[in-house]
Length: 435
Image (cartoon, rainbow, N blue to C red; front, side, top):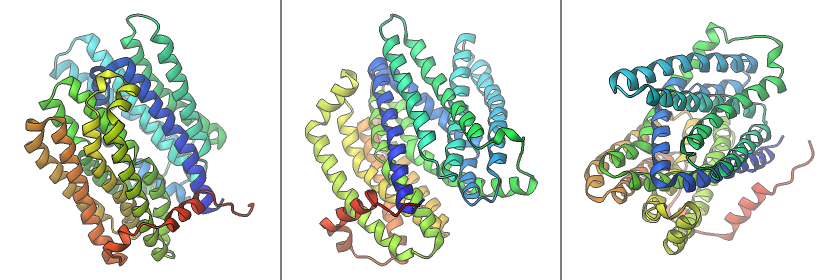
């Protein structure tokens, strides 16, 4: 399968999955309103940190060693199940101790937290592990189709439940259980499709050493990125009420979904950069994407300014009347992150991972300092400004180093041309010879 065909398949099927994910967000938000959905997403943000530490970013090692066929895929499949089971036990003990002993919550509350944490953490862990393994086989359609279809089933279930009374906990429980179900379905599908059930295999000692050595380096950068990206949630939670928290997290999640396309492109830029044979072409492509994304974000900012308030309340409900301004203020920062995602892949492909780590650290420091200054005084507006400035700081740092590797001028970054859109069209609609 050609490079262009892989990109098309990735955009198509991952796009399908993320559209259904957005629809789940809309249905859940309308049912739970700002207060309820804000609490759910804040809780999953806390679980995401535990997930990051529990997974040790092993999926990053999978991406490298599975794509290069250095470690047998079936070994990684069984190791994924074993690791997830072990982490489920460890996470369960930690959650039970924290909420039961330290916070002294009621047994019913502890059981709820156990259910939510284990289903979310183990479900996302399995999804991360097995999507990477599917992608290593250049199979983008099956994992995203399965995830998307299960999202559709969840939406229908929530709409049906909504017709009954006292259904809050039923909806919340269904949301978390479906995440675990998605992970299990992906695992079973991979094991059946690639005959992993034929023999039980695990990586040997040398392979595990390679896997963890790579993954632990990635973990350091991912932890910094996580805090730069989501530490504002804790500041908003501390200084603002639950209604503002729900509105801010909704604005943040919507802004982050704009990053989906750049992340897909970055997954292609990394191997192209790593090959070393197309360094100049990849650098030029990043400049084209800079101009394209700048135009898209300018249009998005204009649309949000004029119709954002009506759009958000119509789609998510009246309780999300405060989404427009935070979303608008976050957009410049999300544009910066869109470009930084591409540059980070470029740096990684050329062996300059330290640029990503240092840039993320710089962005995190800026976000935290501005959150301390602004959130108490300005609430979710201050949090939005802090995040945007922090993300932009990371971009400026990355562009400074990118210029050393690929010479360009300010004029090149702003010289809009119709040829840029023809380039995008050729990539997306490229028809390669049959293979």
